[in-house]
Length: 242
Length: 242
DNA sequence: ACCTGAACACCGTTCAAGT
DNA sequence: ACCTGAACACCGTTCAAGT
Image (cartoon, rainbow over all chains, first blue to last red; front, side, top):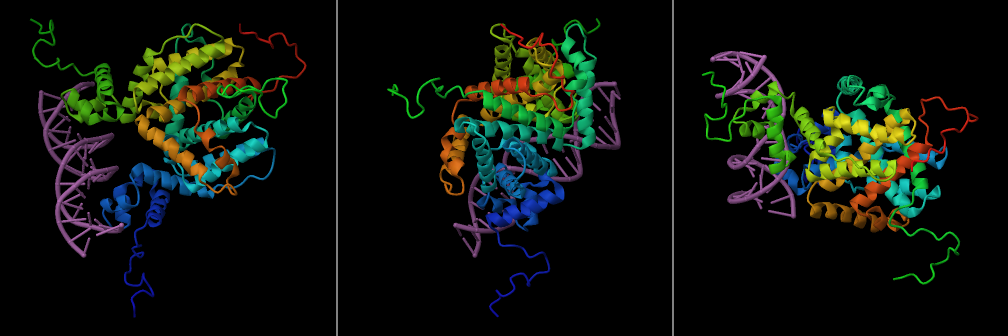
């Protein structure tokens, strides 16, 4: 017996896994699903891995790095929309993105604050760029647009995912009531539009915002790009000053 | 002697102020300017007020409430743009908004996550609504649009305000390098557009995003509103803003 | 009503020391 | 190189007890 045939047979416990970045993040995902992101702390994770918190710093730089890795893992569950116009597919993909973030309270906040660079995040960027450029959007504009689209989707998720429904509804109602009870002389628009400010469902506002962005991107050139001269051959610029 | 004439003359210290919500938030602002938002904790604030943390809970509900109040106070320093088209004024106002958030690292994150309802925040809403509806934007659309505009400005500030420049630049460079070194077969767009993804300055991207939104809002009806019949008189359609 | 000391239940991160 | 115990330096919030 070399003692290697059944590496987990020695203990009754769920088999203390050998430490590795993959194992750390996998356990972090378990913790995420079981208790939510705010419980995915270095200390709790260490406890779950049957070790001390200091041991984790071999595999993750810090808590932000850990949460970014968890976020990237979760983005691996995104599906690929295959129907509708390219705009519809962008909207569907980002709606799915918010659904994923929505499922794990707290994760949307992480996405707002960290710039992930894991494989699933880069896959998402690639898919968005492909849809936009495939739809005829100027590539330089598309590169900036994905940031805008993702930020809007993330912000919507953060707004609607965090906290329980009740607290969130109370928040909105507080704003509506605050707006509605202001002096109409000093705040005519706000008092008149108090209900509109907080109207609509999350998906409705997400959808509208994404379509606003897609429409706007198609019509707004990037400020730092050369404008195409209106009547020259598209091959090359004659005598550029460089 | 009522003992009220000089309430602060009894002590040499900076005059332990009588506790009140205003005093708590004023001291919190001092702490914000001196040490940044992540040092505006209940415990440090209590120490600065020469009391224990428990005493603060009479005046603020919790830390989120405290930070929201600090944010609102800071928004009191916004200026009023008076030149340019209504679109230019919206951009100028929100650029100023990001400048204010940018000045106080950490505050942008608070703005991303909390929905303030203080007087300066409602003033900002009123001014944005006035500019949009004054520019001919449908009021219902304007109400939704301010959310979009503020979220974009806040996200831009959060991205560029947090952390020191060096770390932030490293972050972007990491993304650029990650994108550039992916397999061009699986990620053709991302590898080709790696530089574009992270190009541009903060103000450039903020400006572009805001103009994208303004353009898109003008062209995208809200999904839950009745469509205007297409054959009405175009009396107010061109809406020249000057 | 306002204020407090003290406690409860946690955090992230570092570091010298082990293997 | 990897792992650890222990420490350092903090947190937010509650609550019984005072005034």
